[in-house]
Image (cartoon, rainbow, N blue to C red):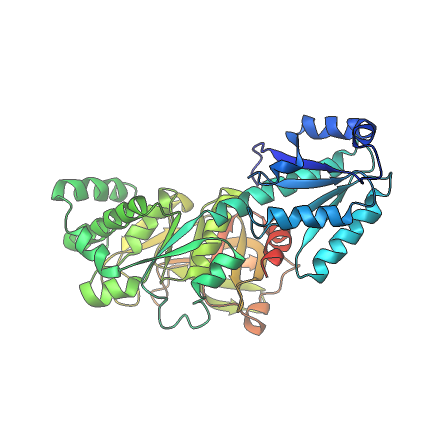
Length: 421
């Protein structure tokens, strides 16, 4: 979880029946509390602030005023929860409850943050947490995901419309022609490509199948994608990688591994839900992640195997260079991950508003020649059931993060995604 300090803004909302200056003095201790935590009081004319905005319900009789202010704010900031701050006096809580009830009736969402006193540290921490969650949402709404080709044919449940992605999560999908990547990859000099390639190969334990030509072509694809990402100002990228294999005998596994190693979110198979999950994880947790296939489920052990032919070197203890598993062509990455706590994530559903989470622990790597190259066995924690994947899957790929983060991810999803419907 991010711990950096962020600012929030708030409006003091009191009834016209009361002297606003008098009530501002009566809540001066709360105002000082907000100030101590980077809270800034705004005039109502500043409803267009880009910071997370809270309505401090100073008195009752303010319900319609808050709803009117929210309607004005929606012209500047869309898909935003209404954050209400209430305290024990002057009918503050009844007014906040009435406002939130009306929002829910209208299909919107919001939260009430109740402060028992100006010394309510637990209450102010919830406001700070919500501010941090809002920052991630804002970042997603300003993000762009490059999509090179449509989702692979087999991803029949992982191909949401760009309009749904934008409305529910925020990012804009930018179409990229896969052919452009290939032709752009040919413009780089041998010296440029070999410099990039050697920087990657120097981290590897050994090379097994790929030829020098295959390695060179894979590094060229990396350079082409990275240039496109820069030119299009993309925040993430996903590639219909099998088109490269079929049309040009080149795999994207090395390119995607190195991009993720560079801190640039890159997903496989033009799988937008998984790439979006990886971007969300990076923005919220500042963690790298790995997109993989569930290869085997062991119900009695409450365990599963994950496997894929690419992974960022920064996520593994060591790796070797292999061929791509399904085709035997090009370059694949076979990494070994040490035993450690992990979180598994999958987003999906018709409107991309469903979330599956599970925590567990990597128990060992795998080396089967009948699965994608990087393989890990994971035992889920006792409060998660691996059989849920069989009963109500949200799709194929699952995203893995190091560490236990389910509570924080779930909290963000509950607060932020429900408001997009």
